[in-house]
Every structure is written in C-alpha cells, then in structure tokens.
Amino acid sequence: EVRLLESGGGLVQPGGSLRLSCAASGFTFSDYAMSWVRQTPGKGLEWVSDVRDTADRTYYADSVKGRFIGSRDNSKNTLYLQMNSLRAEDSALYYCAKFRGAQSEYDSWGQGTLVTVSS
Amino acid sequence: DTPMTQSPSSLSASVGDRVTITCRASQSIRGYLNWYQQKPGKAPKLLIYAASSLQSGVPSRFSGSGSDTDFTLTISSLQPEDFATYYCQQSYSTPQTFGQGTKLEIK
Figure 1 (cartoon, rainbow over the protein chains, first blue to last red):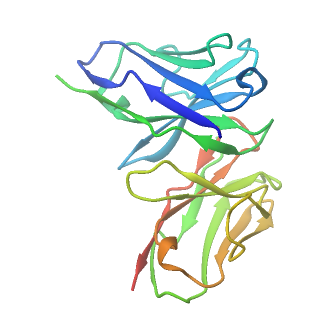
Figure 2: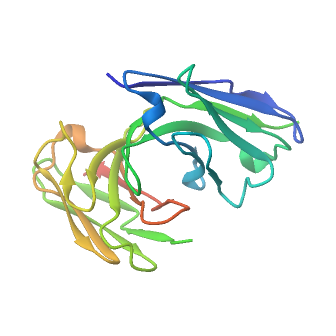
Figure 3: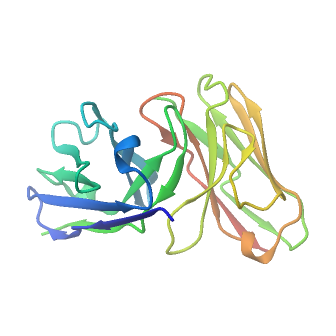
C-alpha cells in the first residue's frame, strides 16, 4: 500500500522559513516523480513544485519561484520542500502527491501538513 | 498557463440522480484530463485519468469523456457517499492546473 506522510508544517512569521518533508513507502520511490500541491479555501488546489525521479529536474509555480526549493533523498524515500521568504499568501495545506507517469495523474496523496504564515 | 473552468460551482442533487460536471480548458490539452473527489478533511482521490479511464477500485457509476478542451464527469446514479467536491486537473503541460471545484450537495 502506498503511503505518503507529510510533516514540518506550522506557524511562521512573514519572511521566515520552513522545511516540509514527505516520507514515502509502499512503492519504489526512486522510480516516480513527485509533486507538492497546496490548498486554500479561497484558491482551491494549486500546484507548487515537481521533483523528477532522479532529482535532477525541478519545476516551480511562478508564485514560489526563487523562494521554494524542492528536493528528494531517494536513499531515505523522502521528498522535501524548503520554503523561504514566506508570505501570508503561502498559508495553505500542503500535500505531497505521486505521479503515475509522465504527463499523468496523481494516483496517491498524503494527508497534508498545514502552513500558517502570520505575525 | 492553462486555466481550467468547471461548471457548475455547486450542485444539489438527490440519491439516484444522474449528475454531470463539466470542465473546460483554455486551450487544447488533448486527453490529459483527470478527475478527483475530495471529502471534507481528506486528501483528493483519483477517480478518472486520461479523460475516460476509471481508476482501479472506483465504482463504475463514475465515467469521464471528452477531448481537446471540453470534458465531462458523469455519475450515473448518485450514492450517499458521492456527496463531495470534485476537481478536474490538466496534466498536459506544466504548470498542471486544477479547476476551481464543484461541490455536490444533497438536495
């Protein structure tokens, strides 16, 4: 059974940093690209970042480019999102999600970790 | 970017009803369209991928159709557990984009 377990969320002041983690199990982690997707009541579901299977390619939404860094450690079956220069509009529930294949769907999601940016 | 527009935003229906939700892409996404169901407090769950393929374990009352820019999700006979929010998502190009969601409520 595929399991994705996010952690690292919390309350942080504007301008601060957080590092999210997503621990994966139940599949060969190094074979699959992974994503971070966030959700807010106002903006719905928003794609944040992709990290390809070999971690040599990463992609970012314009809204986080230059501030967030996606990475992975295939030896630890873990996906990361380093979030810097956080803004109030980054407050959201952050999910990690597994791609089934190229240009494909997310066939598994974690339960999410909540990030709140507020003074 | 490829904005995705779902309609309606909300829908009231009864158990046993046939329901259709529409998703429109701002440009052709060929068949790279996926549908997810989300219940309160839970992560999205994949229902339909590649416009019309049923994800394993999903009941056959769910079906998808369409191509290029216009897509539909149909639930043939609503069951109590189907009341949830439904999202479409295009996976043709980065950034992957989602529709704004359709909340399906009990009439």
